[in-house]
Image (cartoon, rainbow, N blue to C red; front, side):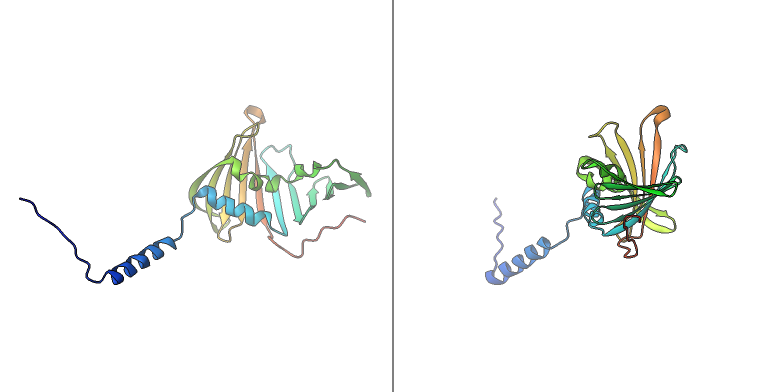
Length: 201
């Protein structure tokens, strides 16, 4: 015995219109980003900043703390215990014993002062893992682990991102054995117009 099941659509135009509406509504649903995509979006936003401030501390106490101001596109002011240094383009200004020296640098040398944004320029080369929510300095943040193996020595960073989509803190561990150390970077003053960096007079 065979049962013939048939569904009759008496109003084909109405049926097709309803199906089209369903397809259009599902096509516009947001695509949930993963940790990698979230940090790629952060990197674009961060690297477009006109200015910011960072404070860098090293677990190796032989390395002094440093505070850096950045003004786009290529101006840095670095405040260290031994004094303040400026990098503007490919020129460094150093003040020693009250005397300021202007030191031309080879092209590209300034990249060594860009550790505060290096991770965000290399997101595509990293393995990214989301670690959930965490409160940092009283602020709710999302925590990530970033692993860099493309360069030697390999490094691992923990990154905390605030609700505004900007980094709050990053800890980067590198080296091994007695040479292992962790650099902690605190970020603040995003697009602060009061950050202006001019060469010392």
